[in-house]
Image 1: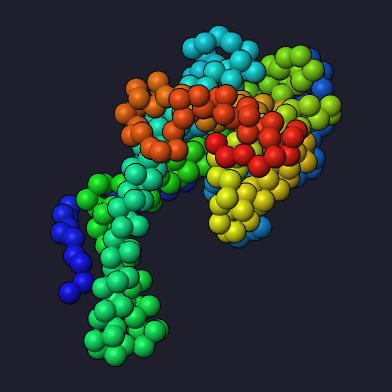
Image 2: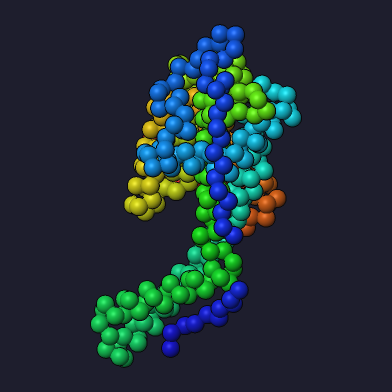
Length: 340
């Protein structure tokens, strides 16, 4: 008989509101302020593209309720804080990452830790199941293919029952991506609407405020960063995040290595992309990436993990930051393989 485990089972969307720009928003800012030196595709109003045109999908997205909600959040932060626009963008990003993505990231680590702690039990089940299938295959005269398929099918069922028992299905660990990625897209499009004059509030153009709402070398948040400092910084921080994950997963499977290479390439590709969008968007990307790096380091802290009730695993270390520095030194300086 094959081993068994008991199982415990546990309105239509509103129409999109299209904002019609007032003629005054299409004119140059008052006082002879300099217009943004953006590419044609960036300054062109999405309202000029018909629903059946190539930009119909973007028009629907740029005027959708989530993007309008992101615009309202930015305006609220700007009004309530009294900060210039660069400060409002930073404040909004920090608040959203701290209130939304940090708890989700902690939950992701909680699920992954429980899955990791199940591995010894899964290996034990696999060993006994392999023996039982071999015995049954010999008794019933199964071919190798039938025995293999029986083993895989039964093993998938038993592992799934373990996940149900401990309430830690790996799919739950992906909830961070399903929340963080849309939020990143909606905030980026909202800032794009502000920077190109495609959004306004209470009769004034946010675009006019953004032209003088920057700081340091990027005073005009509607213009490109000609120095490339912001775009390069975005790429560097994203690469740093990727390398931290790569160091934690040394010896991973070939598919995981390909995924790491792909994300590295994507991080590098973000540099020229960030150089073609308004500085307000790049500033948001930079702050978001920096917060992501900070959260990743924070979730390595034993005290913080204990505070979040993340289960201990055999991979946890009492000195995670010291181990991380040693791993960086081994990989990029001494070139000696080292695992965390």
